Length: 400
Image (cartoon, rainbow, N blue to C red; front, side):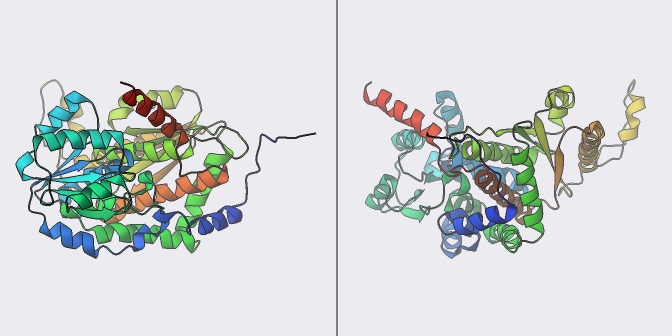
């Protein structure tokens, strides 16, 4: 008689922690916070171009955009552009905003054969001559893109083989363009270190990360939709990064052949108070909510002491700082959710709008993703569902 079990036992926190400790030997993102950034910073100081163009998709761009979106107020005068979609209208619109003759092109592809990236690279190379003065490649050391760079004597930075694309933001994938923009990449890595050291010392971060991951796993059949509700447009990039990290890492078939379902949704307050919040409040109870707030915006913009005819009854908002208003909106929504008593939620408060705090948030989510994957016994770091589509596309293109 053969017996194939279609369930698994949820292991103890101690077992999962030991597995994550063991995983550090083969999964490289855990160790990125301790990398030497000297070469990146030295190169960044030599860049004279004003337009910095990242050509890459998914893990090659989303993390960089998330940090850029959050810290744009701290950047220098250089302009960062992203070319990632094969949408022809989008390509031409974005390219029209770039001074091609005075731009630095950063080509990012871990494998070196990403079809979207190489297609756009071909298009750009038809518009401007790419050489070692205006092009740098970020890729694996033995990729075809690396060969292209070496053939043309272009500067390269390595993506370690043991670092997956969606976990690569704290490698040269993100650090290089962000350093060129004048951000302090050492502070980024220090934020990661704080979370890393606390977690692996089983300190404060260990407690709340493990508790959150365990709750999500133990209640996944009831609450299989995980919503990040970020109260700032500065976090829209983070929301997109989270959706890829969560969806591509955790939507898998586990070792027992059971399909795991963790559906990520990223929404932004207060805008989505006027859309998605209704579904949360009165819709099916199948969602967990994580609110992300910024305690201190670096901006004191204030609602003026102005009375508008026929709208005098709203004068109570006069003289309130917008940063206080948005946090009051967040707190009011959180209170409304709390009062319902049947929607699981937690609140993450970013203390300051700086490098360390955005890095803490993102590294925390990387750890949570790894832990949830370990709990449900999947390979968190592959993406066979995505690869299947790539294979079909290559066959279609080869037969055209």
